[in-house]
Image (tube, rainbow, N blue to C red; front, side, top):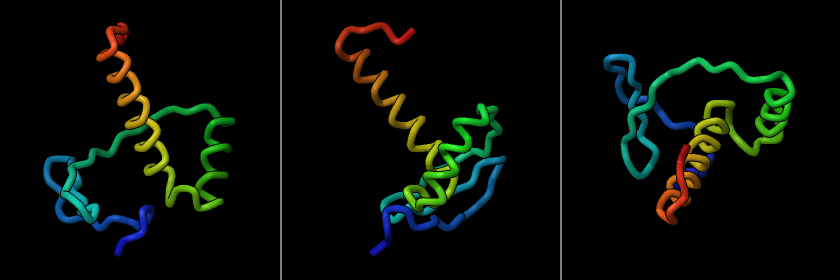
Length: 82
């Protein structure tokens, strides 16, 4: 069985998208660049060093996904997303 934080293996690369097998499904990912303040980056690196996350990308992916899900839930309750 795969560990929750085990590195996924790329399956294909097409038109800037990478496809990873996550153990459950194949999902397309895109490589992006972000700007992040140094303090936040230092805190992120501590999480990676502590093996909370396997790498920065996974931590950022999970944070963004969680935030979007919270906003979508708020929207379902009648709140405005703006």
